Image (cartoon, rainbow, N blue to C red; front, side, top):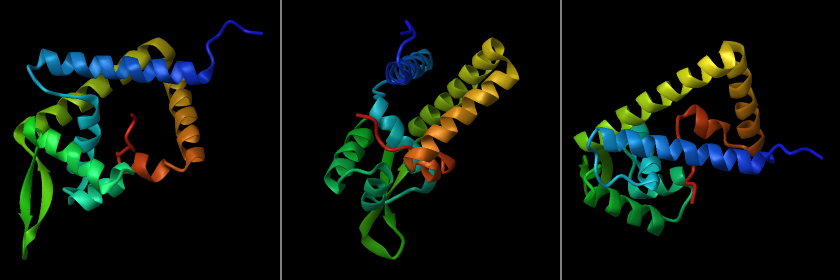
Length: 155
C-alpha cells in the first residue's frame, strides 16, 4: 500500500489549484464577476460565436442550461448577443471587451503555469505529463474538444 494520493484526488486538487490561480489572475486585473463556469462559456464563444443551441452542444448541456449560463455571463458583461445576418429572430453570442480580457488573462495564466511546471519537471517531464493527460483525455473520447480548445462543463 502506498501513501500517495489516488489519481482522482490528485486530478481534482490540480483542477482546484488551477481555478484558484485563474481567480487570482482575474482579481489582479480588476475583472469582477468572473465564475469558473463562465470560463467554459467564454472559451466556446471565442471558438466560434455560437447560437444558444450550438453552445448547448459544445458544453454538452441542455439548451435551457446553456441559455441560463449565457444570460448570467451576459449580465456579468462577458458576452453579448448579436443578430444572425439574414435571420432577425436568431442570435449568436460574441465576446465583449471584458470577455476578451478574461480569455487573454486565462491564456497568459495557463502559459505561466506551464512555465512553472517546466521549471519544476524539466522539458522532458512536462512533455511526459502532457502526453499522459492527452492519453487520458483521448481514452475518454474528448480529444476533439481538447484539440478545438474547448471543454465540457465541470460542475
